[in-house]
Length: 137
Image (cartoon, rainbow, N blue to C red):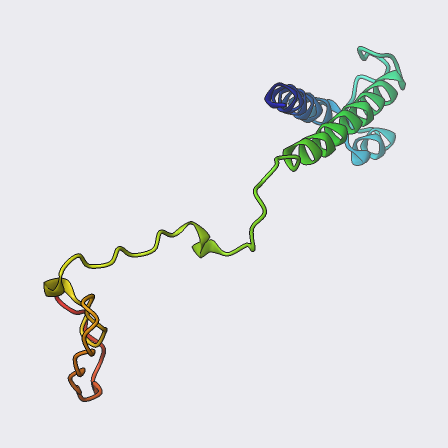
C-alpha cells in the first residue's frame, strides 16, 4: 500500500509543477485586448502558430488538472484505508494507571491502608483565598 501512495504522491507533485509552468507560459485575457489597440507583440511569430498556442496550453493545463485531481482523490481514499483498533475515541485510553504504593510510608493520606485497618482521618485545611500555588516536590 505504501508503494501506491508513493507513486500517487510523485505523480501529483510532478503534475502540480507542470501545471505551474504551463499556467505561467499562457497569456492573460488582457494581452489580446492590448494587441488589438496597437500594443507591442510579434503577432503570428509564435511557437505554436497564431492561435494554436492558446489551445495547446489550455488543453494541456486541463489534462494536468484532471491528473492532479485524480491523484488527490486517490491519496485521500488510500490514505484512509488504515485499519485501526476500535476505540471510544478518548485521548486517555493510552495512559497507564498509576502504580499503587508498596508500603505504608508511601500511603496517600485519607485512603485505607493495605492492611485492612480503618482509614486515617484526613486533616482539615482551610480553603485558599489567594492565588493558587504550585506545591513543592
